[in-house]
Image 1: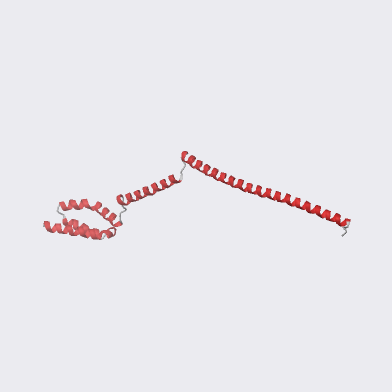
Image 2: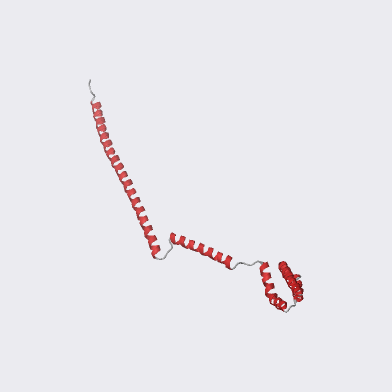
Length: 169
């Protein structure tokens, strides 16, 4: 078989191209491996950097909390403590108000007003033996509209005065 010189040149050129392609492929494989290695190093470095940033943020946060406490700022514990103290202080004040300074009903206030206005005069009249005068005044006070809330108490007092009058007669 005779080889044609143009075929030989062509085969030689193809072999040369194949050899060049193999060296290029090896070069690209080395470049690809370098890029993979560089990527792995970059990812590792980035993870390290993120870890360092987290540690730095945590350290800064602790330093900030310590500085706030040193400068008199309120931390969460101080805020909770002041809220707790305020709640119990309010509770104590409420109990003191309800136990010591009870708001009085209208009925009680009306009776105190009636007592303050008439008790001394009634005691003086009873000690002088003027029971009828006290009973008449009590009867008059039963009809007054401002004494409507305390009518049972006035009737009770009127019966007591009547009983005392009958006893003394």
